[in-house]
Image (cartoon, rainbow, N blue to C red; front, side, top):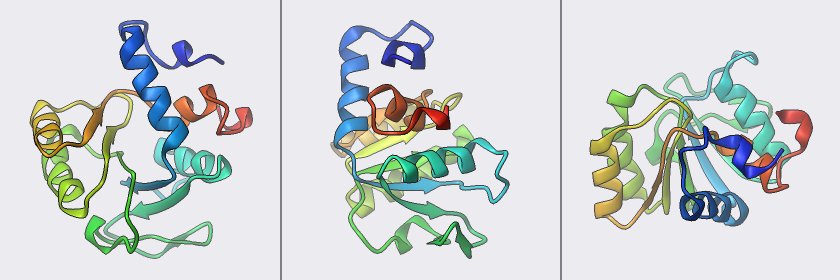
Length: 152
């Protein structure tokens, strides 16, 4: 898999390089919207990112634990500085998540494949966060060699 396989071909080369750079340098990821169902995309991404050596902090209002990781009820409960807030929630919920990402000092707001929101983009970028939408961070991690290919 190459990084160009991760997009639908509409992303220019500069944007693709920016996404690859984020996937390479990011260490701590808050994954908002983790499902406990192993067949759901958020759970698959969680497992792949963990296997790729990322430090992942799952967030879901139900709380609990997943694969030995504490599931935080709110983004504000994550105890360490976060590089990327990855979002698996409906687009209409992303502006509030963007505000929370800004408040916690995250560096990137990354909306999962199929999710984009102009208001969330504006909130993030106005505060100096990078914004990525409509692409899977786990798949980008595979493309740059961080996440094992068996997590495709």
